[in-house]
Image (cartoon, rainbow over all chains, first blue to last red; front, side):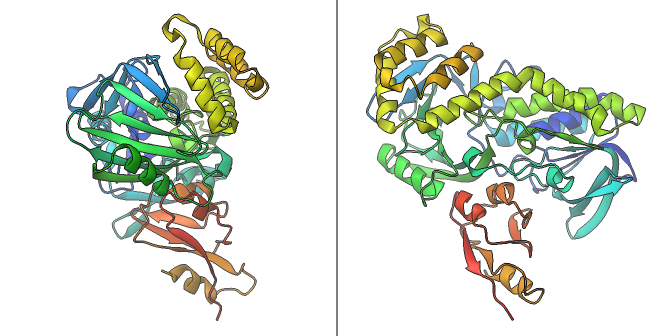
Length: 397
Length: 78
């Protein structure tokens, strides 16, 4: 430990490790801390991500790629499904290896990396954040820096300790449970990611089957935290798995939560930038956030590096990062948020009818707008509740 | 299991009469509860969830817990 760093990054997930690597690569003196004793574990993720948005930050490597996806299939609960190609090439990955590689690269770029080290408070100096109080093994000490980047995930407290309001409403919080399932060969299609929608499966959310090959898959679900009706995410998942994959082995049990509010209004304070799940940057429709966290790391370091060099890390200066995020994701994420709200309000019967109609359309030849119009023509009763879907869908494509 | 309640009991009388108890046999220390706690009453010490005096027993954490590992209990008073 040095007496002072240019940047301390809290949390060695994809966002934090990328921020640490980029900042160290810019010549800054960086400390990256991770509270868990093993970077990459425990996994809290369905492990699918788009390749195009990943490439600027890491070239794909076979050792962390489990499956290459060429289709997404969206299933209702009445036996119909819609199959669409992914909007970008998509991978199912091994987060334990992926995350460790990203942290390794941060270390190679010159960052000091410490696993088993928690942030337990923030340090203040003249009203600005000036570092973090850290706990390593049984010792608590002060770690000082010009800038703190909080990448401490869904349970982020650094932002809160700094005075930013980061507590999401339950209606915008996904609760998740997932099993890594093991079956005899052939139960999973290694080229297809499945989504299952319907209030009886996952109220306010969806279930997924993301293959890691033809014998193992991440099978999980998210619920709207306000819609669970007194049942746990685990109990919904057990029901889903018993019906669809009876007798499958459970290689891993995972729990978690994702804020799906859209990014926080304020993601900076004097001496502090917040990135990734800690800043609620996950996709407000499906909750995926690996790529988004890495992009945010990039945007934050682009603003943070000259700020640190000039010695001006005021919120006013750092706000350029917030603006860069908004310019890139503001409108599309607002649209995705409204789409999730609309879908969550549609009954299971209506959803099944929509999926049946869509399953009969030549989707590959149609634009999003055409698909929405064709579906709604067949279901005029949904016109009012789905109006937001049309306008939001048109914003996206 | 009721450590949080015991710790807080000696401190105050005006404190809300409820808190949460953690069933450590169920807890996955995933942090979903920490994310939604409006009182900053929960802290994840690596693999161990800790409840402090600020807990008001509002039940948000119990509602979001994917494992239903949290339950609102009466604060034990001296």
